[in-house]
Image: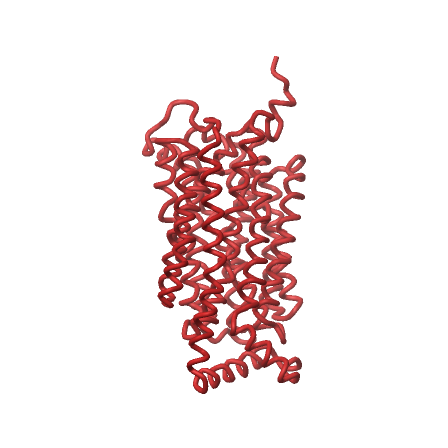
Length: 459
């Protein structure tokens, strides 16, 4: 008789090696996500003629790549295998990262979003493949907990990406050094509102550009090289991972059973309320996550006097540290609590904290924005697991819909960029006003969480 404890283990012993290797991918795409988020602010600083909306095309390209390739990735792994999907994903990932080298030579902003677009073709393959693969490595009753465990290693890569962005990119940009010099030369700035400080430093920088155009052009070239180098190294690391997966024999758990046609799978999925509502919730979640982490820099610099790019990124690192700790805590709590109910509770708390972020417009508001990361840690894998529960072989196409939902991370930052370029509303500055968009997202997720443990659970 089968050992029941082994059957219900989060990760059965015979899957541990493969589980560890696939879980490493979660850290690998976490690094890409969170070294890229601060590039919105970095490129606006380097190419100083860019608006907030234009620099936000970094996120539009990055998460648009997911939307473009999610369904082709699902069709590919359905025809071939999870391992083949991982290998192709790693190849595209490495290609996109290495394209930063020729992009830097052009000194044209447009080539960087295009490079990231290719890079995220690879990430779309990896996420479409790895998430359902992890779900399949054991009993269905422990699938959501297993995915939360694997996803817990995603913020480890994210923290490394944030640290790299903060210490090796943002802190070394000539614009950051110019700002530091201005703050040191004008100690009275520490007593002024953040918006006034930003205005004065911007005027000083414009004067510097006019007075020393040659130095400014040399600084731009050096700054672009600073952005390029981590991606070039990342491309090499991803190629090493490609070789490891090429040599490793992987289990074929995801290929058991008869394969349905993609159209038949899609028809069944759209009749599954839990799945399509999960896709909607995931779209709003990714939008909220990306905007909270991308624009924490803009929020801090607009609302906290004396803030710099690298200091603001340190708060992003703190948010990711909280996210990491909370991910392990939530994985433990799922042993005892219903996923849908915990999802509803945390998304409701996130919505409340977001209201404080919007209306406080000070250091306390920044801390509330950081605190939201503790609530978000549960959301992506839990929505994923709830939506795919009981879908069987349809999980491959179902996974594509959930990865396609990452398009929310392409659209909402762009919309927030347009709001930030405006004049605000009453006493709310434009940056704070834009955070009403992730607030709406958390409300939608809370509704899905409530339905997941009440109405949808009965079906």
